[in-house]
Image (cartoon, rainbow, N blue to C red; front, side):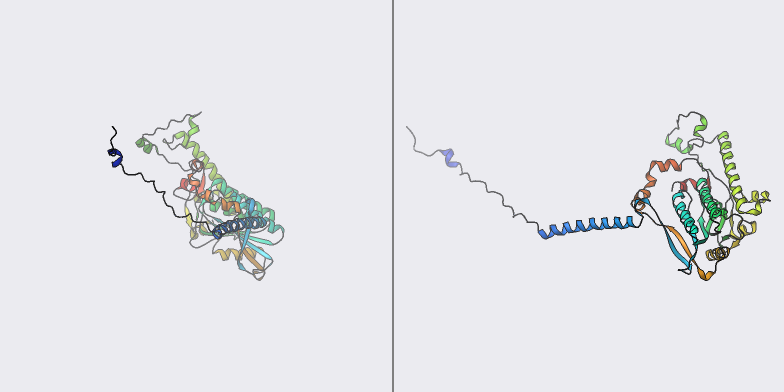
Length: 358
């Protein structure tokens, strides 16, 4: 017989309620004015970049082409006759492209009959043998081809390769000026070498190169230099010194008949301006303006009808874009390999190897 009593389990079960749907705030609508502003900014920046690229190309500085700027230095800014100041500053390492532009610009102005004299302003401790010789060669060739007189003005330092470059003046009298505080001379050659064998031993590093001949690794820093290697390097140094002396005899005629006097000076010693004047390494003690006055005199110009300008390379677009890569050059393994390659320098410095890596 069926029971009329309610089901206990069903009675205790609460009624199931439908789960309430989560409530979200209505999605914010993007303002059309904000979108238009972003589009406008993008188009503006893109257009500005494009216009600048076009202008740079029109000026001839895009594509890696670099022109030379002329900055008025002294005398009459609108005179027809021109005297140019060309600077050699810092360590002479990779100067060929820039210096060649300046010399080619000067050669063009001389061909037009506008450039009448050049003042070479040197503030450099020297640098690589090849770089110093390149500058000397370009200056010598320019002077001999154009007949334009060359005068040298030495700044704080004009030593070793810096002095080497000054010899391009040739036989012209009274053409090398040094300021009263100038350091010059340092006639000599150096091949940097450091022996770090002791440090490698402490670090547990052993050099184990495989070479076709023992002399293939001459100059290695991982071991002491042998007597044979030292003699070979010394022969290279002596040859570089002979080249330096030959260049000095070209620019300082007084030493052609007195080689012993030059030998006494070619010790690598640095001289003050007074010492250099007494030894015959320079002609006069004076400032840049004195050198400019001498250049005007040699060119037979009237000071009232000459303008003096300073040449400077104009940085091209691609050089600007590559500035960051040049700043990080020290991280390039190729730069380190170049720095640790034994090579001769006409350079006055206590750390030539570190300077070479610049």
